[in-house]
Length: 219
Length: 246
Image (cartoon, rainbow over all chains, first blue to last red; front, side):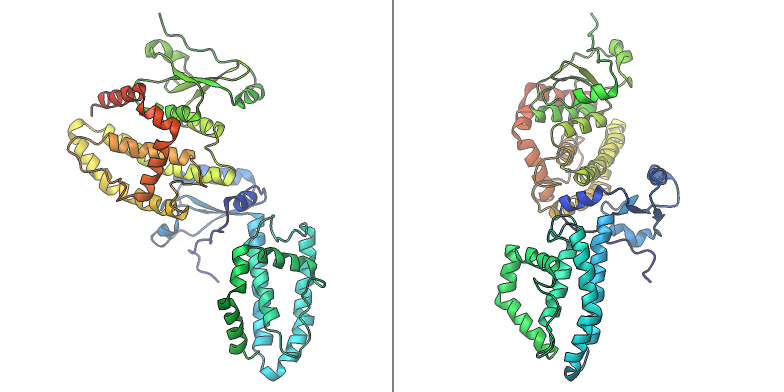
């Protein structure tokens, strides 16, 4: 459980992405202000009026002050539906990579082919099915949220790349491909269409890191 | 003869709202012969490239005809001939900023601009109350206090925010917004109204490079450079110093 005086981490993105998120009408809010009316009164009234779900953050001013943009309160953290979505996808991918690390990378090398097979069938197929469905529902446009690349896209692509890289020699093929998972593959291709990203992926350093990673985990 | 004021068009807000969308308006400003609370409005009018003029002030006779019995008031004549009455300096500033593309491309940018505006306005209010409002024999002391207690915090935060936006001389995106103009205005005023004998105001190209870049970008904008060189602007400089007894 996280400490109660920790402030939410603000999403970093271009103002176009943030503006899209800001349009949402089903945001939830967290307010940081002292326990008096003061300069927070009208903000609290507006939040109450709106009917939106909102709560007060625990104030610990000496610790929190330097983390606020103008070193004053009130500060309000708006959790938009689409920001929630980026976070959801992020945590979802994080769950997948942790399961992969535990079950496949963590297995003894001689057990890996079997463990990988099981992982692909029991965990990865479910993940893929859910994500293919969601991507189709949101327009199959190569993006998880909106129509620009977000952290969700990059996190998912990195997760899939890791699973694809660390597939045991002689084992079953990873069930992720253009044919099997077209919507996910489109996200991957969209990210790889970014020139500087593509250049990085082709660089000697990136290829060395691939080789080192395989070697380190004995793949 | 009393200097009479334009008569605002009486109509419902939907009709007036349509008129307000005019991109071809002319303006008349009613404000005293100093910068004061009219400065940013005049700056925005000058920036806009719109045709604008000053109305002669005859305050005892005009006061009753203004909505809040204070100035500035601006009368906008829209392209269809409607006359809109704009009042309350900050409300006028936001209205003009919005009309002339200085208020952000989306709700999030507008919020960022407003953050900066609010932060700068806090310092402007403190300066107004503590220095302009001080007895003349206290001014040097109060100014030195502000320079040491209030400005460094403001400068630290704003230099940081500007660096986060690429040290481009802009607070939001890569073009002039109300945020840039408000902060440039604040720096200009603080530099201009340094009491005789007070310490150096801590803004300079060397000490506050990012803020200085904002100031230079605003002041070198063609329509603003022309405005600041104008005779009227020099009159307002003199009027400001004289009315505030600097």
